[in-house]
Image (cartoon, protein in one colour):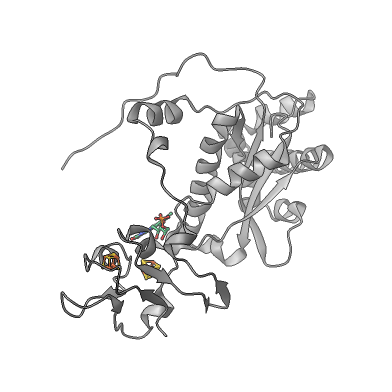
Length: 291
Ligand SMILES: Cc1cc2nc3c(=O)[nH]c(=O)nc-3n(C[C@H](O)[C@H](O)[C@H](O)COP(=O)(O)O)c2cc1C
Ligand code: SF4
Ligand code: SF4
């Protein structure tokens, strides 16, 4: 059986499913024949299919269903039109609403000592997982740390890295203002995670670190995450110092304590911000070239 089926009674032969497949894995042998899997050299269409569901999602008549299968050692569920979420016209947002959401999103650096309900964090993560990922890999694992002592310990790890760096590479240390972060920490301020009650760590198979696209995938996930958090009145701050330590200093990876073969790639703190921004600050004009 093919890895997808097309309902002859529903298919109108429009060819939209062919257009939206990343690797053109579907074909119609004549303009009157139903879509079938294209013959591709070296690896079959079924093996190359990335389970993105575009062919199902784009079909105007709901004729196409991806069948359940085992792919690259993973069980992939059946995906027909009835398995997909609808796109609700009444929820489509205006350009102005999107612009305000994106432009008014800010980094927050002061938080209430109030935990975010687990259901809220899970809702946000469930939206963020719809971020694009190269080859639809969706290879990230989410770790949510809410234990104050553990967050403090990881903050201390970042400070330890900064201190070790201040001796080995003092100029770099000053260039990233690590000297100020250490100074604030010593005065009792959580200058690393800004006192937010939760720390989100994105991790995945260690080999992913060799691919720039994988690193992009993790970052895009977190960009979605922080935007999805805005309507809940939540604020976020990227864990850039922790990520730098994770990349440059092996003890930092060890401090996260992930299972063997897993590596932490990105981090973000989240919580209820103490302050509200009253206006959108200025940003550079885009440096823009047209060709
Ligand atoms: C870092 C990155 C690189 C990507 N590169 C390509 C690409 O070169 N060509 C392409 O057709 N799609 C590319 N994509 C899109 C993914 O294949 C796509 O996000 C994924 O299949 C899921 O589909 P969706 O974005 O419609 O949810 C890329 C996505 C990301 C995040
Ligand atoms: S699921 Fe995606 S990759 Fe697979 S056949 Fe459909 S459109 Fe192509
Ligand atoms: S998009 Fe749907 S209706 Fe159009 S050719 Fe593909 S299966 Fe048929």
